[in-house]
Length: 226
Image 1 (spheres, one colour):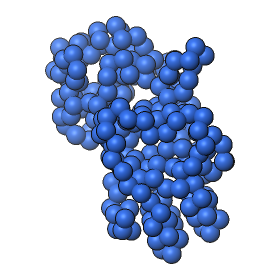
Image 2 (tube, helix red, strand yellow; image 1 turned 180 degrees about the horizontal axis):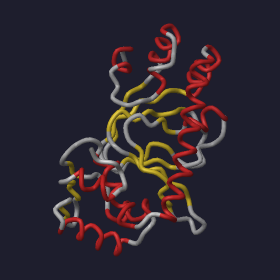
Image 3 (cartoon, one colour; image 1 turned 90 degrees about the horizontal axis):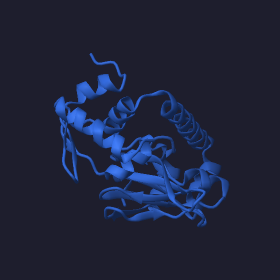
Image 4 (cartoon, helix red, strand yellow; image 1 turned 60 degrees about the horizontal axis):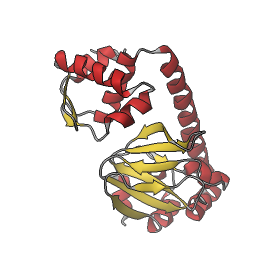
């Protein structure tokens, strides 16, 4: 894989932004790009953290085993996400399982390569700490929104995140996954989606959700619209 490919990556991963040229070139030599089919596992909870994987395109769901052994969706992540980064830096086992929603392109970076880059570049290490701090704050904000925001607002926000900047896109997520992510029942989610469809914001069938009107969804999510 050439360094230019990392530089052109559409994500916001600091691997391509914060490393000085020599260290970046060495890191890129160890990067292994790979394509994953829909509903394919990428990382497994409880396994040794042998690498981090940076998402170049597509979306994944991050899950953790619940008290009764069921998978609980914690986050939906897209381009720029560095999967398993905290465990790679700490040397712990992977804390979560990560599975693709639709087709995904991701780059694998060995744990040892990441650690050597941190030792060589304090600036890079600081960038990774900032990245992990932002993830922690976002997780805390998400937990707060689950208790304070309405299902309507949580649904609109989730649809916006999954549809990125496209004006019309088929979302790569099943209803039961979306309901679990936003913290509601599939029945309540279904009623919400059909209400949004009645307003012309989305199209819904048994398999797909298609976003039609992002500006209206942004207002419903509480975002400012120019």
